[in-house]
Image (cartoon, rainbow over the protein chains, first blue to last red):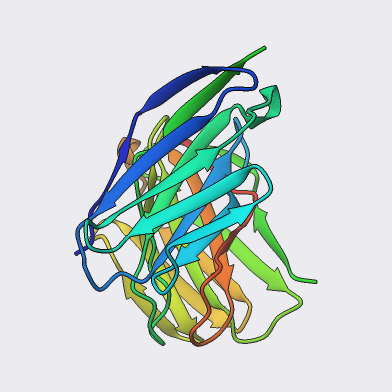
Amino acid sequence: GENVEQHPSTLSVQEGDSAVIKCTYSDSASNYFPWYKQELGKRPQLIIDIRSNVGEKKDQRIAVTLNKTAKHFSLHITETQPEDSAVYFCAASRLSTAGNKLTFGGGTRVLVKP
Amino acid sequence: SQTIHQWPATLVQPVGSPLSLECTVEGTSNPNLYWYRQAAGRGLQLLFYSVGIGQISSEVPQNLSASRPQDRQFILSSKKLLLSDSGFYLCAWSGEGLSYEQYFGPGTRLTVT
């Protein structure tokens, strides 16, 4: 089955700096890569996703890049703000009519210091 | 718009007691439904998923079971809880068929004592 590894496990940045989180996956057939943000005690919220036919996607201060050859993808947050502090999870799946079974990475705790 | 509900929000149960967690989705039909568990400070582990009424697939063998008695209702059960069943249980949904985005419910925090 799919295996997703995520690094770093914790990340501390100064407000205004950029944050980068990296994930690698094992199943070359995976074709969907979402990122979730989870605040303490809350549900994970989908913040951005990318499909295997795209190399990069941006949404305001957030961007995701995908390298299918190397089987890794990254989340980039620019101009970080204190409200970006949370745990971020990457995930991968091979979409089929049998459902979208996400395999998650272990998470990255991001702390943005004001 | 679509809304996903879970209850109860929190639950404290003794070892060996039964469990029933419920998840319902509004505003969509024939969704794909998922149960995940998140241990404290850890990632999310897929437990069960369902693409239709009565259709359940298990990802991890354990003392939990799932059922989908209605199109938009998904239930997670156990006959006898173990200490290791403690965690944050999250239900999620995605659209039917080839639908990518998956959205989570508010979760149930279960403590087994």
